[in-house]
Length: 354
DNA sequence: AATGCGGGGCC
DNA sequence: GGCCCAGCATT
Image: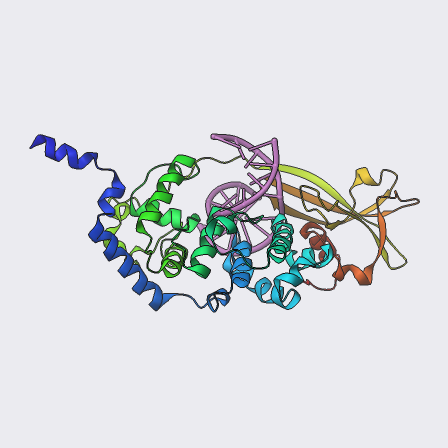
């Protein structure tokens, strides 16, 4: 009898949640909750692979509220995959400017060209995964939502839901924990309706099982949640330490002459912000004569915080890497967010075009 | 396994 | 003003 009780304790946590009867109950409860409570989002009106693909790429690391204005506009500019495949660099980056992670836009066009060449949108998990910019999460999302493929999605929302549901105390940044959670997600997946099930899991994480102050009292899975029973819902999931923030002081130079402003364009294949237009910095204009400080602002990128000083300068002769750009053409160019912030503050740009 | 890639919301 | 969020590609 001692053996029996120790056997029960040895069971991994996910086994306590994922008994066949509980799995069935969780799937049904979750599905009912989702059908009654799901938000009405633009990409939930369709199963068209082009639409779903674009929405999933835009939603990588990006909040729903930030994506919505870009989503509608994107299809006006690129009504078909073929149109996207032929997009110019400027059109592509302009459509994405402000969304961040610009390699997503570049990969989008590369993938569009692959799809055009293949003649149809890939319809299996493996073929979708082979598209540039598509990883395991996005492939599972598209395959399940558009093609009913039984692949469980594991994004940040689902990791949080599952870490709490199974009281998994592993670091979700580690690949071991992620593998365990992927296994949990696949076990729980309702293969009869993977599109709805996957979206229900993500929706639960987005609106109920939130990072801070989860709304457990409203959660359809409350009675199955091992973290809640243990009072650990606010401690899970565990996330390891990240790199410390570094502060860096930088200057931007504003030279305006005859209705033109001096700018430079980053190389299209640059690792960071490739193809974007920028204000020059002092090392690019060594002989510029500083006139005065026009504006100060800060801008955070990943683990850096930049404190920018925007200076008005006069230039006698400009390096060939810089270009005099007509002020009235600025809104047609992909401007980096830093440059846009500076030019908006100086009223060189009349209003935010993004 | 570790790092870089934006931008925005919350406290 | 600092802290948190988190897919994919690259190394």
